[in-house]
Amino acid sequence: MNELRSRALLARLVGFATVSRDSNLALVGFVRQYLADLGVECELIYNSERTKANLLASIGPLEPGGVVLSGHTDVVPVDGQAWTVDPFCLSEADGKLFGRGTADMKGYLASVLAAVPMFLASPLRRPVHLAFSYDEEVGCLGVRSLLETLPESIAEPALCLIGEPTQLQPVLGHKGKLAMRCHVRGTACHSAYAPHGVNAIEQAARLIGRLGEIGAWLADPARHDPRFDPAYSTVQVGVIQGGTALNIVPADCRFDFEIRALPDFAPQGVVAQLQGFAEQTLLPAMQAVNGATAIRFEQLSCYPGLATSPKSAAARLVAQLCGSDAFGTVAFGTEGGLFDQAGIPTVVCGPGSMDQGHKPDEYVSVEQMAACDRMMDRLARHLSEPHPFWAEELA
Image (tube, rainbow, N blue to C red; front, side, top):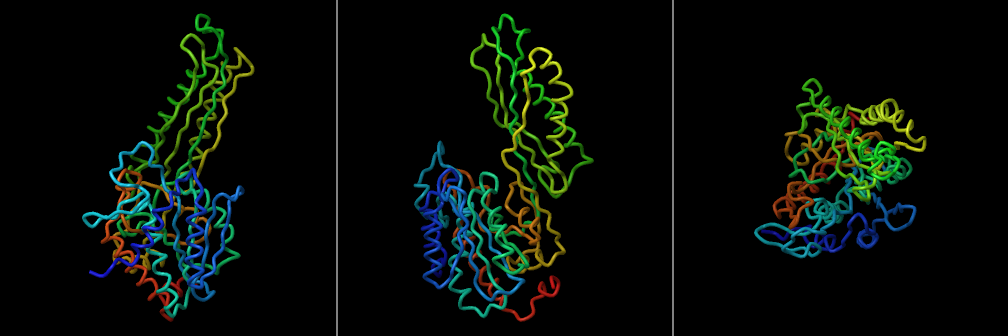
């Protein structure tokens, strides 16, 4: 068996501990130098603190109809996980490549980078664009500034191919996500005189109960979309904090909740319902005790869902590239909805499985990596064709 083309680059990428809370500049610097050594220029788009950066590079003619290969450089933490191997040193056993980010999603980035010499040697008629972003794992944050630069940096692409792990099956849809924090300000007093205070935890509990009612409404079969699992938009509370001692009526409580929304559902409507309940039902009674009490909502992160048509040129192209038209959806989110909102048709397809992502001893199989390398070869051939079918449809 031939040596896996992308293995050495995957080892280098895994070696950078790019947990979202930390900088990704060492990895980005390595990629920038790797591309420069091959004669490819790239643009870095930094965050405001200049501690992180997106990377954008193009190979081929400055023509419309190219393909954006998008992926994120950050990974989730390994804290508290029972790894049996070094998470930031690639290891191999039984046809599997272990390390944090191998599946999600440095395997795809390594395959893309390993294909660059082949892209350069191909008679490309339309370009390949490399779009590597930061902080995807904490709300698709970095890619937003990258998308702002695209209209000035590249000609209109025909497709964005996001390499999240789908076992190289084409994924056309996923839910969006809205993450919120609710702050409840009550009034403290001795618990023996509880009616003289406003218990912030109790008010937060009433709000959480209202979220449960909204969640049940969303779960009604009339609102189902069978393409997704679960087949409806969901609401859940993940964190709650409040109180200082049992004999003190708590003055403060906060909780974090999220809405995982079907692509055609606006999650802001859930927040509006909860705000209405707070303002019309809870606050009047709270402020009758103390006018300084309050309920405040804060958005933590938000990204839209994705719903690409299976009849689109983008879907047909990816089906040819990966050798499958078994179009599906995934439960996790990606930056795909943001590319779609920017007018770039988007499909998710990459090596590995999210069943291994975010877990100890994360891995991607050698077989999946080899198949992704072959997908890059087919992409080069497609972009070298004089009259690809998708160019006419997008003209």
